Amino acid sequence: MLPSHYRILEITLVLITAICKFIFMEWLEWRLQYVVVVVVFWTLYVILRRYTQPDVFKEWGFRTDNFRDAFKTLFPIGVLLALTCFVLGWFNDSIIITWHFIPIVMIYPLWGVIQHFLLISLTTGNLKRLQGNSARPHLAVFVSALLFAAVHYPWWWLVLATFILAIIYGYVFLKTPNLYALGLFHGWLGAICFFTLVGRDPYLEALNSIL
Image (cartoon, one colour):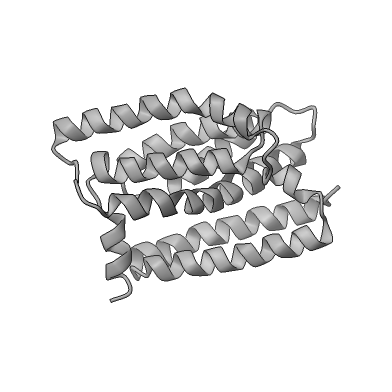
């Protein structure tokens, strides 16, 4: 069992990571550099924790035994939201048709796994365990959803959408903890949302940040 102060430390590191997003991605526009540093740092952390606590992967949701159950729960929600993005994008004339969608829809799920590891596994999971096993999970899910929505500021469509999604993801994770299913759906929906509803090309944004 992980001591409470370690869980608080993990939540604090997630908050620092979120704050750095605004500094490096929004202010300095070092989008790709920020993503690379975050991926490297948290990958090393995962490896270290996996070495010192082998069973932590099951708690975090790095598992395949319940992937089908999580996928079946998320599938109808994902289809409905994807269709909604296309319909709204059509009416707003914000749909971008480009081959850039292909690499983004392939890569973004990996970033989705990282995001859900930080904001669902470490935040929702740790808050729930700090409350105690007998406590209701609503506060943990709500706080994590607020943080998840906040990191998507200043795009208000994304703020609202990710807040609602984070609540759904939080309850799904607590019932069926599987990061792969969450990351896959978040990555697909994120890519679709960017190229339809938001009208942004993250491929060009990442490329421009390193030129």
